[in-house]
Length: 372
Image (cartoon, rainbow, N blue to C red; front, side, top):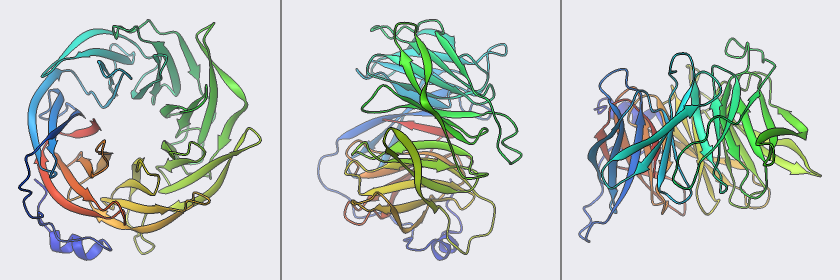
């Protein structure tokens, strides 16, 4: 548990509150369950299941699938199948696995190649097309799942090219790939080439085809990693890992451009930090992102007129290396997975101000992905 130096953290992080639990809720508890993907280099054995009560308290259900390094998870749209990728490879090849979701276990359906080494992200759309981002391979794989959840063989690989200006950008490193919520478009985020790649799915050939624009270059040395869509589906927020910024991307006349960028760190913070994850509230009013090094969640208020961000403050994650975090489906709580301190922390959200209040924490072996 990472419970020391709390007074010191409270001084560092503007707007942070001391780590004390709120008053107990006397109402009957209902629970929301969630899955935790992990690195299995230390004590972890694979994918775990946890739950959070309606007062924010966390509890562990247990190991539900033994697998090596399930570092990113997603579910089918019908919630019956879970898919996982890991940054290790099977005989040099990236692997995606499909599991049937049962009450207290995951049953392996099958596995398939992702098309490149080091897969670190997976997403699925309403037509059951699946994209995987292969970090080491610098490419994106396309597959499809049957209604049963069974994976097709690899259908197509989109190989990225180019490089950036830092030591992490000497070649392409596809870090995530996202289906646009309202149109046939895949946006691939490449940290190494320092670009967003735009493609359409050719369903006749089962291929990814670049759009007319093809790519969008980010600021020099930015290193884009993840993104999130505003609920209005008009604004895209890109998290840049290497320069610790968030960029607002808009579209005009079928052409994407960067409208605005903002730092994720306090102006007086000079130590090393790198950005990790990003999520937006369901009402589109607040945006959150995680800092590894500053060990915080940065909170922004979203301008409803133009989508630009105003920093509300930073809140300590009460741990180290917050690689991934998630909002509960009802958006009442925010959960952070602290990779290096083996804990998951829950915070209550103030839906009017966006600010966070500590509720609970629980041990978790090298947690790196939270999926409700």
